[in-house]
Image (cartoon, rainbow, N blue to C red; front, side, top):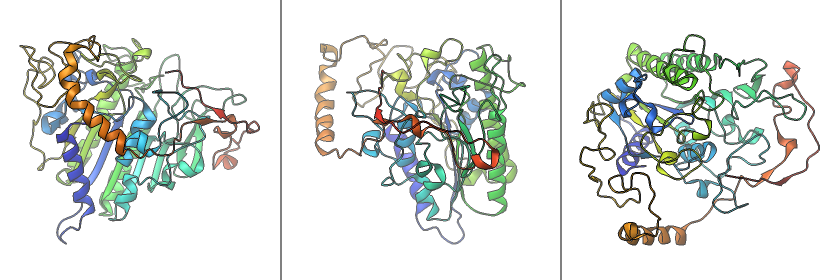
Length: 437
């Protein structure tokens, strides 16, 4: 995350949590977190198909952040970092089972977000905010780890990825929740056609988000909406209206529907007259999953690799901040669309940043030079002391992603009795999770 971005986000949160004059209302906050969407998937960042008109307009009306980084190149740790403001090694979303391995929260994971962590909705609640998450949670699926136990007032979505379909005997299908109880399961009650890619989930998530905004505005309550749609995570999906419309195939269809949804949300803010009092931030949890390409994976633009790697393609994400009347229009945009991005692409291959970086576009665009080569000795001489100081003062959180157990899978979530969808799970037999990547 760039210094500018960190300062911006910190200012927004601080303004929300400090005392306000009686005639000034706390700003609403909307975070739109995409799933496996890459840096190169937006038209404003050079995607040749130019199929994201609403996001491109959002960037033109706000601030484009071409140097925005996630805290981890995988779903769960990056989301934990976003909501806690702490690195995964500090908030517990890491594993000690193997050195430098990625870990996340599949169905069989035993752990989840620690009660010792303070999440953003918990902080905002103290100032009268109402918070809702729409979409993917991924910080633990057992009851004690779910959103309503961690500061959110409302939730519509799922605790896990939409993998499946499963046979419900060896592996249960993932549940979809409305607040604290499941209301169905993916592929059974919430259809995803693996053959055609058709699903109405993004449309449902959009309607949930719009309804929440409308209700809180009518009630004159400040709100925090965490809109975490996951259509761009394989298996990708889109509704019938968008299927087959993109030049980029099914993945592009999903991006187009998400872009449309962003436009609908921003339009509602303007219709309600609350756009000047609502801070909106758009980004992705990690880089595009190249393992799912070319049909179900996105683009990381000029950057090497993608999800599950700490190369630029895995860590640098698309990011836009929007707040009319507070963020100057067009900030961060000073280029011919798709041709020049400050600090990233230039006509003369010149490095513009004053901060020491290991990735050097001008001389090493493919990140091929070994880290210990002469090329990077100067920058390492400045970075190494910072790393050493970090390690020296680091207080790691208790690792939450070490243990797995088939017995903790989504066999019988809360609310399954009402639906007749409780399943019988196996006897508990925990083991140390294996993380191959």
